[in-house]
Length: 557
Image (cartoon, rainbow, N blue to C red):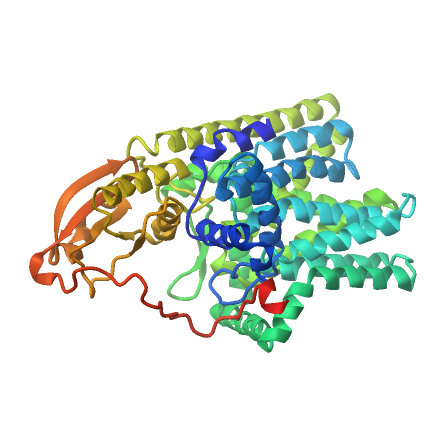
């Protein structure tokens, strides 16, 4: 089921927007010009000029190379690579759960994990954070095996843990901070008796995986390191509110997203603890909150009970693999919770990919407790909870898939989207329909396509036009050409008020609706045309400043 939900209509309904088109350009260049055109640094961390390590691009390149044999365009081939690792995470998570839980509980929790709306959606498109689930659970599972002194080949598991850590820290800025902290704290407590050679070999593996970053830093004079400290300073300055406020707000968000991850329910709203005018704290719960209050309280019970049971069992349990499991989970929770508390008022849904396994583990602990203390009633109650959560996720996935299917046919009005924060649904299939529509005009007169679109789709549509060999650029209102095809692409639900800034210089010729996207075909007014045609060979100016310099391998060799 987990595989089916991740692959179903993947190449039609794929999410392809800003970051996906950015990455596709990078991979296509390497495919067309050679592997030496791969960069030494990866994507930019959100909201900064800091660049991550390049592991994501290297894995994308391999996926795209494999895709060539099946005649798949690189964006689809890359997405299938993301999907593959996320399907693999289901199996690794089962093995991880078996370190503590019975086979039946592990199967039930893994089945729920495999159909989680939150995790299914983040498996169905290409984005560097989307590889976090596999590499996090792989790294932590290898860490448990490496410190299990009753297991065989613990040194090899240690090396696998270092490989996983080397990759996962290149996928997201928070993973770069949180995962090393988890591993270091756990190793300091466990203090495995590896000889110096093992640790030095682990360090060599880490340096090998980070060698592109280090080479780039040497070549650029440490520009990315400067951006790292600049980003740390910027993010810390954004959070001026007190610790109590941030802890409360972060707890509320954890409960909200843990419940979403377990059930797929996006419409819930948690009570907010706010300060009144006289600085007294009060609880605010509006209409949506009141409707979902029972479920939010149930989620909070699972959340807090899970943490309590870990602390209780750790206190009583003797040494062994089960205690190691609980210790690692507890460190995982407190480190991720602490770091996210620092960013409490700037949390994005993708941040919870780092701790997305925890609500399932907490639920497993609750079910294990019910089974142990309430005999057959507890067993049945546990299975009812798991089954109802599975049905809930499948229901909301069905709703989402229906919306994606209709996106290219009619305007979809959606409610709250707490997973991807989308205002409407736009698919890869739909964007290709838009690009083909523009291409037909290009074929008629061979004039360049000048386009303006919502920022989410501007670069994506430009990418598709480039792949179709259509010369295109963003509309520049200071240079209006007689020989040009002008189009504005906006979401259908946004209406046409935005056209006012164009209609003083253009005439609206045609409106074409493609589901949730609408294309407006414009013609320049004669009095505003200041050039006959564009000089396509003019040099482009780079307006980006203060960014980390990124080299390609061809620049080194």
